[in-house]
View 1 (cartoon, rainbow, N blue to C red):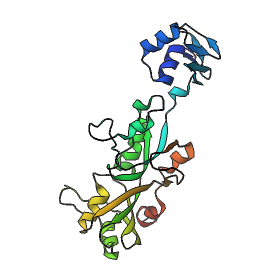
View 2 (tube, rainbow, N blue to C red):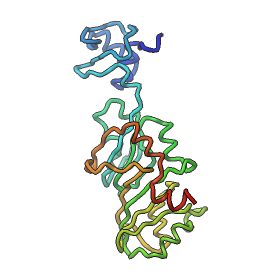
View 3 (cartoon, rainbow, N blue to C red):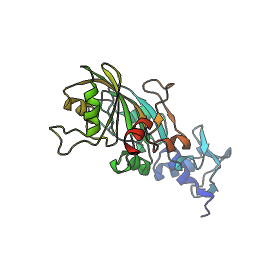
View 4 (cartoon, rainbow, N blue to C red):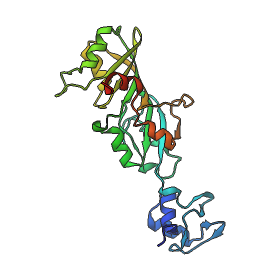
Length: 252
């Protein structure tokens, strides 16, 4: 099959999140159109950019083969899991998108943590953003119970050891915004990392929001629970370190 053509049944499967058998059945029933014409042959080879429609929903035949990468402003109360018996899951926010069940959260934010979260079906990108070896920075706005001190800045930069962790945390950047508010930039993404870093200095995080992944910032126009696709230039920003962290540590 030429690279610029696709089997109709395969295109329908990928675009409308259907099994092959269901796609074949619907096509044979005359419910699928290609460029406005009803087609009943599932094996028909169509142009990869042909317009196909099913039950009034139309898209380009190759659309379903493209990787989807969304920026979400994660709301409080949602868990970053494929399923959960007790709490709403992030993926279901995308239920109006075809193939949303194929997407996964890029890393995890705690149930009570809000802010920037990527959701994608691109496994390679997911690995590159979450693997500690790539040193992708994540920057959070933390509100704490007690005052944040200048001494804490040095302790975060040195690398702290939490009693429930086997190894020390890598250096983290702490930028004080006000007495009880700070920006925290990390590269590991370990379990409860920001919260546990503050526990190491006898403080408690009472509110946490992620603002950056790399140099990509949360879109201020997105309310909690809203999302949008990100473009290629924004994807590149994921791998550009948060500037203050880069200046403090990576350029030593």
